[in-house]
Image (cartoon, rainbow, N blue to C red; front, side, top):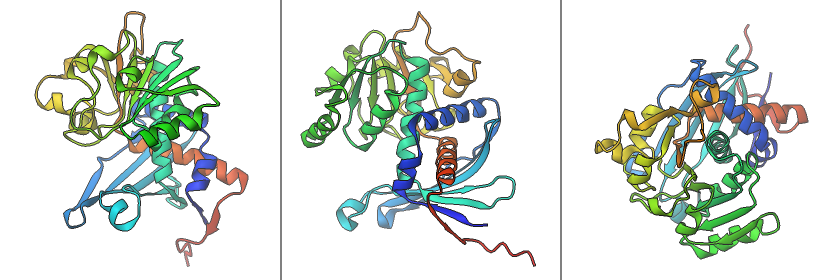
Length: 331
């Protein structure tokens, strides 16, 4: 048997967004039903290099498929300046859960971007108003492109407003999509008034005021991925129907982590986890809901689901480089 090597281009080519969204939704539902195994993310801190490594293993049984994988990912803040490398680099090993054979080794950086967008799309599908047609984006980096691709797969998005303090990034985003959407550069306040709002910034102090939001805006809070980070006014968090991806991760390092640590938010303020909504044991948006907010920290089960789509599609198309990685001789 041989292992399939799949680089960034192959991952992007074979991770068709609708299929990834479906697989990520299935993984969330499987988690709610107790059909996943997802140990806590582990860290290797390397202060001498101003960075760290993180390992994210998981197993998912989604009824029609099951899979296991581990993602090895880093955050090295000095990489762009000192080494001309991205801050985050990821590698994923995708394994057959029955035999443990490594079916594929693939790029985890593009995969992470895609699964993050897919999770926002799943949340949007369950929590945004059905006729949502405008999307606001705060942050015009790489993830903004994926957010638009994913969310426009579940809602008929016509108008897009993008805000970013880097006007060159902002204009580049507008130029990319001007033929497909009514897209324009705007302020954070402009973006916040849309039907759906995705915030993708690394800020540690809120930048989106409660007053700027539409009466029924759905928010995908993506940026907070470490303790101390917060993008949204705590009044928004208190007013919104709050849906989280994972209790332990969100209370420690998600959008809610700061007000949670201060006692401003408690269990009583949480509607529940997205997996329970997807599984049908918890309500999504109802006619009585105003603002909804999804706190996305990113789960290893999302990586497994996305890798499953990539591997199956690449295998069917005969793509990738097959190579002998492990010794399978039993004699």
